[in-house]
Length: 86
Image (cartoon, rainbow, N blue to C red; front, side, top):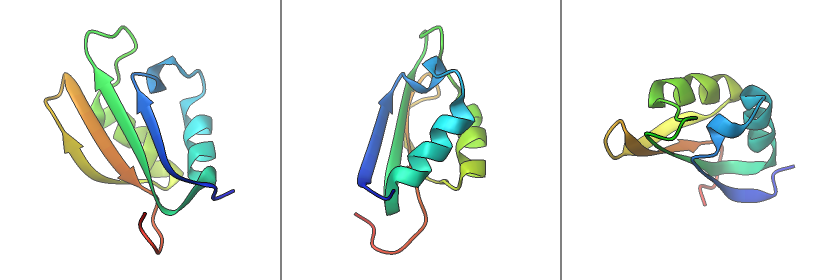
């Protein structure tokens, strides 16, 4: 629990069978204020839109902080709410 400051996923989330469960675990192991970065690039066959990623991450307790890049090649930064941002 609360062991990591940062989790980075580069074209990985679409490969995970149970994405909500994975994101709940990511939330559990991140410290308060921790960051989850998700990068997606089309034409990866498992590409997820930002809208989809946001829809998965928000119910798990993450808040979208920023997104860089065009829709087809972006990196989204989500934050676990809490004190002491790393």
